[in-house]
Structures are given as C-alpha cells and as structure tokens.
Length: 354
Ligand code: CP3
Image (cartoon, rainbow, N blue to C red; front, side, top):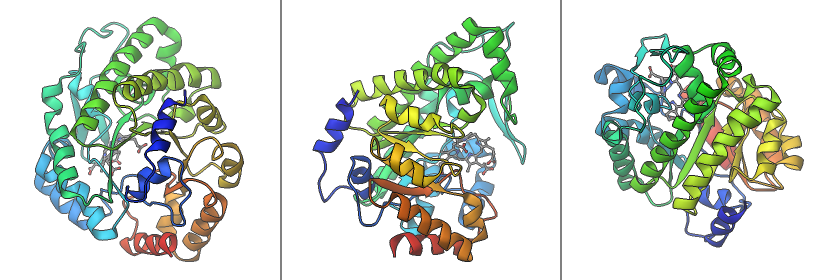
C-alpha cells in the first residue's frame, strides 16, 4: 500500500533532515550519508568506552554510554543520520532467551529446540528490560541537532529466528532453515511471536524519538525464493503494517542482504518505504528496476572503503553516477569493517559531499 508514501511525500519541506527528504522521494544534489555500523570498533573512542562498559550488552543497556557511542561518528564525520547503538538480539534477550556476546566469538543464545518449543520464551516483549534502550533514543534525540535524523532499528523475524534456533552465528543458517522445513508450525509460531515483539520494539523507539526505522534482514540470502516470500517478506509486511498504521509517516527502510533480485520484489511489494541495497547489487540495474519505485540506500562495498585510494574514489563515483538522478541515501552495502582506517571514512565524506 502506498498510504505511507503519500504521508511522507506531503511532509517534504526544505528544513527537514536530508535523510527524511531523500526517504520521502526527493532527489538531492548531495545525497544524505550515513554508514551501517558507524558506531563501532574502527573508532578508538568506541573501543575505549566499550572496554569501560565490560560486556557489549552492558554498553547497549547503559543509556549514557550508548548515547555517547551513538554520537561519536556524528561528531567525527558529521553524518546526516545517527543510528541507535543497540543490537538486533536485544529482542530475544527481552523475550527471556538469555543472550551473551563471547569476546571475539559473537553472540551465544540458549537454542530454541523442537522439544522445548516456545515454552521458555515470554509471550510478550519485556518492555522494562528494554527501557534503557528507549532512554538512549531520547537522550540521543535531545543531543542531536535538528538536521541530523535519528534511526531506530530491529532485526527481521527470519534473521533473529536464525540466531534463536542455532544459538550462534552460522555460515548459511542451515539449522534454522532445516527447522523451518521440519517443524513448520512451530517455526510459524516463533515468527508470530517475533512479529509482535518486533513491532512493539519499533513503536517504542519511535515514541522515544526515532524518526526512521530500518529492518535488518541480514540473512535474506540463505532463503530459496518461496521461503523468502513466506519467511522474510510476509513477516516484514506484518510489522510494517502495524508500525505505519499506528505511527503513520515514519519511513521504514528494509535492508535484505543477499536477496539478489528479491530486492526488486521487495520494491514492488510496497512493504518498504526505501530499499537498502547490499554491495552485490548492480547500482545501474537498481536505477532502472528499484529507484523508480522506491528511494534506495547503499551500496558501497565495505572492502572498497577498507582499501581506500583510487579504488574508493572510483567505487563512490560509480554509485553516484548510477543513483544520483533519483532519491538516494549514500551508505555502505553492509557494515563497516573494524580494521577500516579513519582517513578512508574522511575520504568517503569528501567524495560524497564534493
Ligand atoms: O550500525 C550501528 O552503528 C548501530 C548498532 C548496531 C550493532 N549491531 C552494534 C554491534 C546494529 C544496527 C547492529 C545490527 C546487527 N547485529 C545485525 C544486522 C546487521 C548486519 O550486520 O547484518 C546483526 C546480524 C547483529 C548480530 C551481531 N551483533 C553479531 C553477529 C555480532 C558479533 C559480530 C561482530 O561484529 O562483533 C554483534 C555484535 C555487535 N553489534 C558489535 C556492534 C558494534 C560488535 C561488538 C563489540 O564491540 O564487541
């Protein structure tokens, strides 16, 4: 449905943050710029606060520190948007599935099994547990200048479910995919639980001050086409319907990594107000197939940013040439990598802003 698109277009005006203008369908001479994972380990000031906080989740649940970390890349680079510092796995954590981040090993969860089913999970999101996250959103919004937009986010149900079932990162999400084939009803009830919890989480972020929400479907690439529709697009549509019905006018960006031509289906479906492009998508094709339908966001290869120099210059120029004639938010095609030199991010800012 295009109702949200209409609301967004009606609110186009020159004094709004550039990100909101681009997401409303405006073509801007200079695209708004932010980076996925812009708050993170490539910044020495992040590493210092992270060490002080102890664990990663302590940092996520400490409003003052999480606010500070959210603002670090804005101060340093003047990006057009801040993204809440948090994680997609706070949702399972607030459904009672203990989440920990083992140093250097990534997330660990007590896996959902066919035997235990959903019995160990709460039926509803524990909003009290996530109160520090929403407090972080309010603190950040109060500290940002009005021309910098604040992005809230969540993981899409399939991506989050894949962690809940495997209990950790897996190369191709085989445990969750097999679970979906072998226990479809149980898998559906897990997705249902996540749709409700995730919608609640996004609404709470919006009420605390998030002006845009991004849904990360990081593992879209693991799903065959039919399952992509059923387990990725449909649950995202349900979340989006709840969010735009209750809080019309807040753009929903969907980043479905590895979806391939599935991103064209995403654009046609109307589920997303803007479509995130991973670095594997040809921006010249997206110009023809996606941008006429929806604003696009992306899609510099994080490794081109890591390489810097001429490689970076050429890659940025190509994306600008391909997507600069329509609504575009400049971003990476996935998160910035920890060894990326700060000087390369500065080079990126100069290249995009001219
Ligand atoms: O983008 C931002 O700056 C906002 C914060 C943010 C984080 N994670 C912080 C983080 C966001 C938007 C995420 C999303 C997220 N988390 C995704 C979707 C995006 C993607 O990357 O595909 C996923 C799959 C996760 C799950 C997750 N969180 C993993 C697998 C890991 C471990 C791997 C790693 O990079 O260390 C995390 C930890 C994490 N989340 C870190 C950060 C900055 C690193 C933790 C640390 O500082 O030790």
